[in-house]
Amino acid sequence: MDFMSKQLPVKRTLVFFLVPNFTLLPFTAAVETLRIANRMLGYEAYAWRLCSTDGEKVHSSAGIAVEVNSSVADERKNLGGENRPNMVLVCSGIEIEQYQNKTVNAWLRETYNRGIAVGSLCTGAHVLAQAGLLNGKRCAIHWENLPGFAEAFPQVDVYADLYEVDSNLYTCAGGTASLDMMLNLIGQDFGENLVNRVCEQQLTDRVRNPHDRQRLPLRARLGIQNTKVLSIIEFMENNLAEPLSLVEIADEADLSRRQIERLFRQEMGRSPARYYLEIRLDRARHLLVQSSMPVVEVAVACGFVSASHFSKCYREVYNRSPQQERAERKLTIASARAVMAA
Image (cartoon, rainbow, N blue to C red):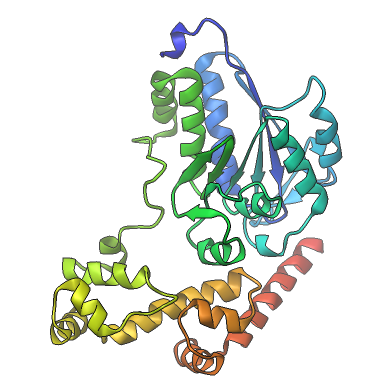
């Protein structure tokens, strides 16, 4: 239905809950999309307020401090009054794996149980999962955080989609994907005509499908055109925890081992075994940086039979041990926090 033919105006109030080190891009993309929709409509169909745990300003991952309108305690009171929101969105970013707050978890559960939509931007799905809201549900999270999230919350169906909507739960991968999720909401309320007008204002050429890929296609990411090599790499990426032998890969690709060896030397400059190892180590690096999984568990999750073999391979590629990688990450986080506190 066209928004011009709507008889009763839709009005929604959203609460953006800001977690320390939240990412600005998905937050501002969401707010600006709603602001432009209001401008096109000529009235405030969408209102919003910003919330933090204690009502104090929150620093984004860019170091920019953002003032808020309320605290979690305020918002719990609002659940039963005239300021009751229609949706609560958790905005987070880096270091989310270290974030734990039982008060926030209880507030989110209460909000959802009262029939209010709850969602997340960027890595905020971590917070929703900690609150137990995503068990058995589909959700989206940034591709960089997906391996650690999947290991930490095996009961959640997580996907590298732009966004997911499941049973009044809205999750998006961050970046400009929050724009797409807000356009989806606006489309539900006012129809395609308003969505197109908002896109024109944002200089956005199209509304992306929620299941569009987050990352560049392999062809563009790797800069190669050979379809056989691309299909083999995709097959490798889908089998990291239990690596396949070259014989199994050859059977899947309908090629001989010698053909695969020759193709990888030509296209990738190394053997298929070496490339497969690098993919597994790359995932291991994400798990070390993005999760608190023990090193032994990271090794198993990435298809290594022992921690010692994993450490040897890791040092070979990254010139540091897995333990050093994690220690350097902790030091970086501590330094960043010290700078913000100064």
